[in-house]
Image 1 (cartoon, rainbow, N blue to C red):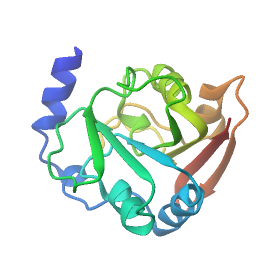
Image 2 (image 1 turned 45 degrees about the vertical axis):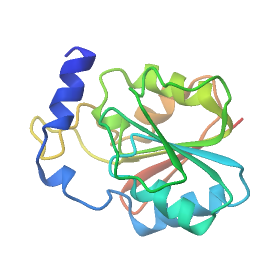
Image 3 (image 1 turned 30 degrees about the vertical axis):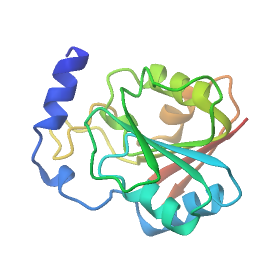
Amino acid sequence: MTPSEYESFYSNLNSVSRNRLTDLNKECVKRILESTRDQQSVLDVGCGRGYMIQKIQATFPSIECFACDVIDNPCLPQGIEFRKGHADSLPFKDESVDVVFCSHVLEHVKDPRAVVGELLRVARRKLILVTPKQRPYFYTLDEHLNFYWYEEALTSLFTPSTCHCTEVDGDWYLTVQK
């Protein structure tokens, strides 16, 4: 798919995955909030409807909040700066945001290694990545291209970076301190 075909696919998608409030489980939400508590800026890459970035803004109103997705998202409240873009070519400068988080996105992208490189490039202090711990399936309801059943399948994308990965209620929760 070309970048415009990818955008069109997700813009026109009307499936179970697009109609959920969030894919994050409660423990991952709690951990993301704890990790952003003392930061000055946060970016949600692949924000979808903006559930997590809105939760951060509501919990910590002094944090500068950014959101990015391939689909235009005019529904975000004031105080969250939205930039349209692809996760493999983020419209942000190097090390421009304290914490970058990306949840339930890596399994949807064509080139996970390129996306990881971009997330690390933009993050100044920390990267948080959440992806489902899911076996490979030929057909899924969630349009997944990549599957991370084994921890090594995910952590190998970060070599030689040091990352910490744990299973949290059926998801991988990975952090990189910079």
